[in-house]
Image (tube, rainbow, N blue to C red; front, side, top):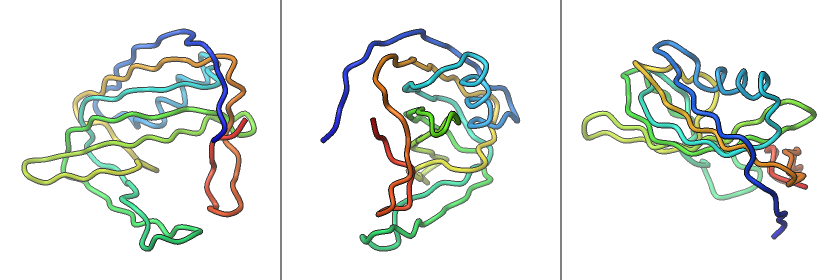
Length: 144
């Protein structure tokens, strides 16, 4: 295990509107406010999104299983933000449901808001945490 101590910095409260790209808007917020690292919470609904629901097999490097939906689902999620070569990299896991159907996974690519998504972003300072490409997994992993 690797870890570092830091502090909580600024706190941002944001409302994403109907039709907004959730991850795109989060990136814009991080860029506008120069947030280097943070943790965020999401509650609301997504019209459509793409997410990884696990690996096809438990082996390295993983081959992701993608699932897409376009039927408007409620979301509750938690994610992290760290930089890789100056670019914000998000890792957002969410539980998404509609009726008796639920998906849970890592939201990637498109993520269009339905009605509203509320986000609370807590900035983390002085951790030295970044995302770097891990050659064994082929994923951008947390490092210091």
